[in-house]
Amino acid sequence: MSLPEVHLIGGTRPEAVKLAPVVLAMREAGLLTPVLVASGQHPTMVSQALVAFGLEPDVTLAVERGTGTQAELLTEMIRQLDELWAQRTPAAVIVQGDTTTSLAGALAAFWRRIPVVHLEAGLRSGDLESPFPEEGNRRLVAQVASLHLAPTPLAAMNLLDENIDTTDVLITGNTVVDATLAVAGRRMPYETPALAARAESENRLVVVTAHRRESWGAPLDRILAAVRELVERYDDIDVVLPSHPNPAVRAQVEAGLGGVERVTVTDPLPYPDLSRLLSEAYLVLTDSGGIQEEAPSFGVPALVLREVTERVESLHAGCAKLVGSNPELIVKEAALLLDSRVRRDAMTAGGNPYGDGLAAGRTAQATAHLLGLAEAPAPMPAFESTAAVTYGASF
Image 1 (spheres, rainbow, N blue to C red):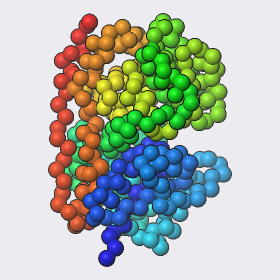
Image 2 (spheres, one colour; image 1 turned 90 degrees about the vertical axis):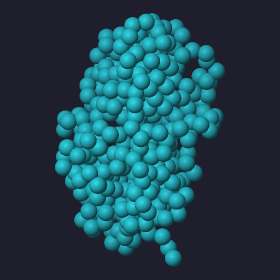
Image 3 (cartoon, helix red, strand yellow; image 1 turned 120 degrees about the vertical axis):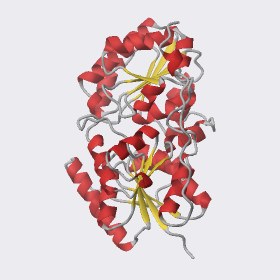
């Protein structure tokens, strides 16, 4: 007898990375048949990310994009998902996070009365404009989901504050922690030649990412200026900046940092390269939500290049600090950590508030429980930070 199918919808590289451990956990449990559906939002990047886990999409939607607008993308994905599920109806659909793919998958499933499982549910910045449109997307998905898998207690509380029934919420941890620990643990050689060459350096590594749309333009120029100043001030650091694939953004990065000694600008990195890079970093400057979640697993503090973040758990735990795009503040906070290894290590002494590496198993079991095939899993144990006492100390 065939097992019930659960369709996992991913359209971006972060979604692929966070869904991959769930697919593997479902296969191991043997209660459900996971079906990976690539939505067509970023098909090449999804396939590349899945390679690191020995996976590939089971279904890939051929989304035609003419105008490039969010409205066009959303409606085309909904149309194709609806056609897929009219012929191949899953027992449940898992959407991840807050992308346009997540919203399309949730709405298409809801309209066909297919239970929606929201992985990484409950993140809130409290500001519909930041991040845009992600804050709106995740709030909308919450309205139609049957099961809300929150990565942290704070995310769960956000859902309860929105009158989501407590029986529909489970704290699982974030599956990105499962993914990055597994991939980095293999210590695979760098695929990117520039990183392979840099691997011989004895300098401290600073990783910089500025991918979010709100960082483009003037904010990115300020961030790049801060990076230049740090490189000039510290002759024992190397900077690696994986650039956004958008040609205009790449041109802006090259204009700001091209030719600067000890700065390596790369194309978007394969996931194994990014995981290994994070594991070797001394410090991260980032506007990426995923990297805020991954870096603490390797004891690497993050300076967050945003004015607000929905990943406030890292702020509370002390492993991240908001600096926005103010170059003076970026340089000041980075210098404090570059000048004191003790201060740097104190930021992440409490561990990672986002997960214990077991989130994928909880997700697989919770989905099976939703379908009446397993007992409900226990939630992730409460995180207790020990960093708060030492984080503010002066050294």
